[in-house]
Image (cartoon, rainbow, N blue to C red; front, side, top):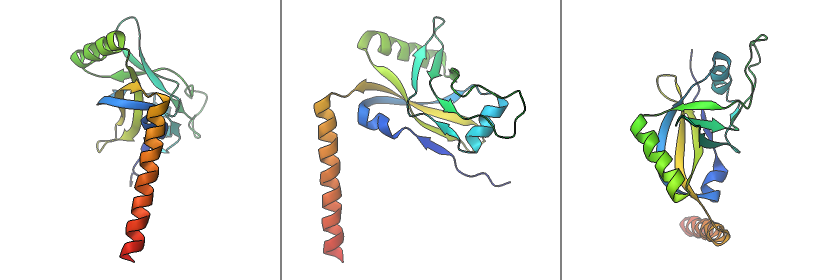
Length: 154
């Protein structure tokens, strides 16, 4: 069986947040959830990460559509899913979130070479409106520059 490459991105996160640090975590999933992810039927667009009272990190609002070939044992599409990280990393992240006011956003959901679902998360700081305008201006300038280079080379 040839496995297609699954790489689900949160494109809005880079525009809304300034990334400080990134981590790759595992996710606790049910059987039908991993099958839906392998079909590419997942979204992390409106999702975010939060700690519970025991210090465990959960991804909230991550959409994994119900598996089409499942029986009545299907999963809930927007359930909270636990993220798997080392204790030291979790303690460091929790300290940053509580003291500095940073947030944790999922940026990428992918399946690694061993067939396991992984979630890339980023410790991030929200951008102000003028930072977003700067990002848009940089993107437009880059696009114009590449157009000029392309027309010059032709």
